[in-house]
Length: 345
Ligand code: MRU
Image (tube, rainbow, N blue to C red; front, side, top):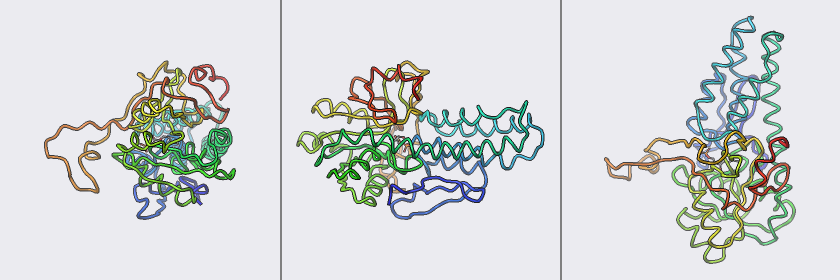
C-alpha cells in the first residue's frame, strides 16, 4: 500500500530512499553511505516534497556524523556545521529543510558532550523527526477528514503524498483518511509541469492505494471546475508565512484563483514545520529557480526552439486571501490565525 511506502529511511548505517525520478517506470531504492550523495539526491529531486526533504537532510547529517574522524568535540561540531551548510544549500524554498537542520544542530553541545554522545544524539533525533512526520500526517489527516463528504472529488496539484513525506502524506493523507473512513472520494490530479509530480507520483500513489484518480493537464483545471467536477481543492505547502501566504509547487496560485472564481473551497494541508513565523508575508519566501531544460525538454528531448528565453520558478506564492483554511496536526486553522499559532507547534 502506498500509505505504507517508506520514502526515506535508515538501515544498517545507510540512508535509503526511493528514487522518485524513476517512478512510475521503475521502483528502485538507492542506498547511500556518503552524506554528499544524500545532498545530491535532494538537489536532483530523487527525493522531494517539503517534509521528505527535511527528514532526508536530518538522516544525511546523521550519516555524515558517522564518518567524521575525530575525538575532539569542537572539531566534530565544526564538521557537522559544514555538513549542515551543504544540506542548507540544496533547495531554498521548503522551510522544513532549515527547520530540520536547526533541530539537529540545536541538540549537540561540544562543551559537555563527547563525540560518541553527539553522534548518537544526531542519529536518534533524525529517526525521531522521521517517526514524528508520519504521526503528524496521520493526525492532520484525521482533522481534515470531515472536510470531505461522501462522493466528493478533490483536485490536487503536484504531489503532497506519502512520497513527499516520511509516509502517509499531507494533502493525500487527508484523502487517504477520508477513504479509510468509508467515504467514496475521488481525485483529479493536475499533471504539474514541468517535473510532472502529479502525473508520475500522485497518479501512481493513489492508484496503488485504490483511490480513483483522473489525470488532467494543468490547463484543464478551469474547465473541470466550470463543469462542476471539483468539490474542493487540497494541496500541500513548502513554506507558509506568518500571514498565511503559502508557497507551493508552481501552478498552485492559479488553481487557488480558479477555485475562488468557482466558489470551491481551497485547503492547504501542512505540518507546523512548514510555517515560517519569521517572515511576515509571502514576498519574503525565496523561490527556487531551476534549470531551463526542465521547461524546454520533454522526456529528454528538446521541444523548444534553441535560443528561446525561459523562466522556471519551481514554486509560486498563493496569497492567503485565496486560502479557505489550513489543515494542520493541531486542527483546521484559518489564514488569519496562522501568526497566532507560534507557540502551539
Ligand atoms: O519540487 P517539489 O516536488 O519538492 O515540490 C513539492 C511540492 O510543492 C509539494 O506540494 C510540497 O512540498 C508539499 S509536500 C507534502
